[in-house]
Image (cartoon, rainbow, N blue to C red; front, side, top):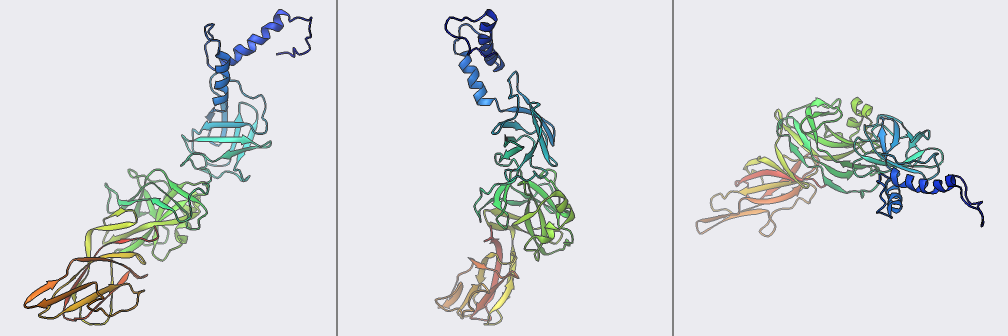
Length: 411
């Protein structure tokens, strides 16, 4: 449209000049996808509203070299300008550095708001992304939950939700299912939000991916698959927020062995956070159930079943992970006409002699009738070797300790 501002009083618009004004209005209406109608005198306002609401939304093509095209007949800015924004839905998972060409205005790099290049996997198929032009290149804003990019620090330090572990239905002896959840890496630098449940096999070397229906390997390089052994379950996260998981040894508390696994390095995972434990009992993952940070064995384990033997303290190994809270059931049997008490404590507590007022369980015989307080459940902190302590006052009494499960204070 030409500049008509030089027309002054007494001048007039030519027919062609006058036609330019309604043509401009008509273009706004029709390119907004509105059908012209003489019965509706608010169409220009509606057309403007359409542009305001969605003119920055484009159709995307490409994986790393992404091209954005306008939707329908919408007009686009003729050139890039500072503050220009564009939104789109990714059609492929990015695999490297990303460039963007918006409506043929020129190819520009897409960077993090820090100015760093986007790592592989930053754009995820089906998620919406927003970029803005800073005068030199595009900067990407954080997507909605689960859309990769670099995880922003929105999760509080120490937060842990979900990541429920369970034996896989189809392959319960070798595959662990890991439910969706949110937490932070162990060094509190990256958010770890798992949107879709994982399936990982303890019998196979670590590999990326894995779902409940199509699990992949999870074992760290150099960690042997051994019977009657505990394994740490570690969540893995990339700088862009992508989450996976794997298994490592009890000794690998920091997850360094898992992070050094070549396939993990190649995939780009750089941080870890422990999300639980599994126990390989014989040739299978011992079956358990998890609610929050409490784990219950499908079949309780008989930790100790014999005479107390001595009246000094005795350490026994409970079937719980190291340094977790053991949940045990205790039963004490009467012997003759004797009275006895037993005290179950943590090795980290004082080694206290049980008494009539300080006990976990006691039994007594009075007038030929016995009273046995059996089946008492208690919780006690196990040491780094999974041991708990008992001490009784009657060496001849029978004691049964059954491990029901554990509570993990780290979750």
